[in-house]
Image (cartoon, rainbow, N blue to C red; front, side):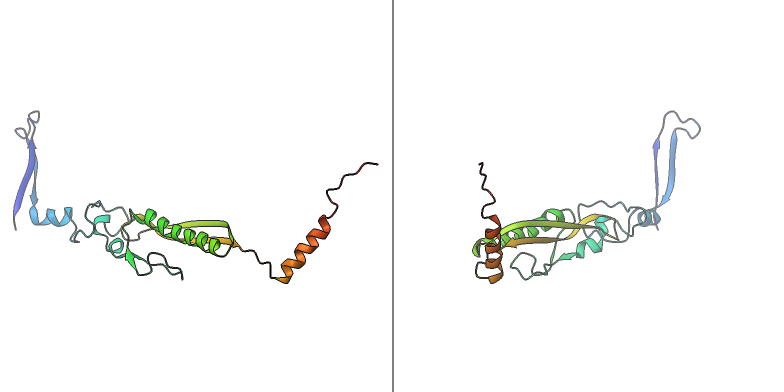
Length: 173
């Protein structure tokens, strides 16, 4: 067991001959000032927030978090991959934009029109370190396709045409 004396010299302190300091046991101070957990996320804060188990630098949950796409489209993240919490917003948004791009391509191939494309990102807080991150996203699209072969569409068009005949006629006697 080793010991260390730390302190500083203060010229204005006449009670202790100018010296103020403390005696610290090195083995206890290193255990109390640093966690026993290894740094798994280099460059992150080592400060543990109140009510949290670890700091962002020591968070195993953030290190092991993986993203995977569950759709049947050919987009990124078909196999599980890690994204850092700082990059999660931009990477997940870029992934969801792939779904939007696929919707426009699908509509163009079949003569349709994209009526709406909405992207929603979901955020969460890491239960271990308290860091916020984008947990995932959803894309919803509405595409309108022309369907001239459908008999219901043909009946609706003929009914609309019958109701519109003469509706724009303005005659004065």
